[in-house]
Image (cartoon, rainbow, N blue to C red; front, top):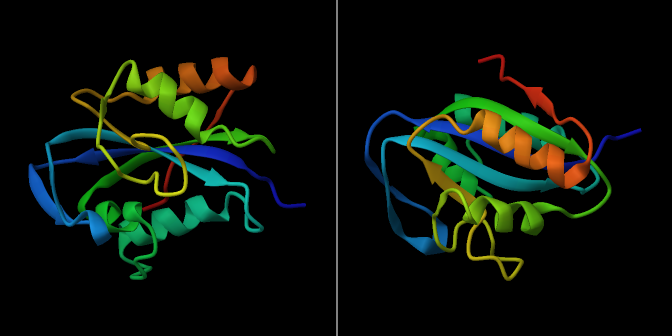
Length: 147
């Protein structure tokens, strides 16, 4: 059985940088931390997170989603996994928008959200896990890349 759900990637950008992100064109990313909310409700489930880890490490060069352009420029701190069969990305994005700075238009082309990518000057891992736990009512799973 494939485990599905929603996930949040916690990324660290070590320097200010400009990145061309698909149709969004050049975006300026500040040094700091980013939280990206994604869906793993498709047939592969959380295998998508492994794919993201592989894009970040250079093992996969395919650029399919906005996040694929950002990943090679960052260090992946972890993925916060929320096993569920309910689409929670937009609910979590709404909660994140109250605490973190939105990167407008990023990762949300298939919904009405303003963003699915958020900036924090400090590592948001604990706060992200806390929010996710409250939304789902269960403890999130923290997955760290082996890279």
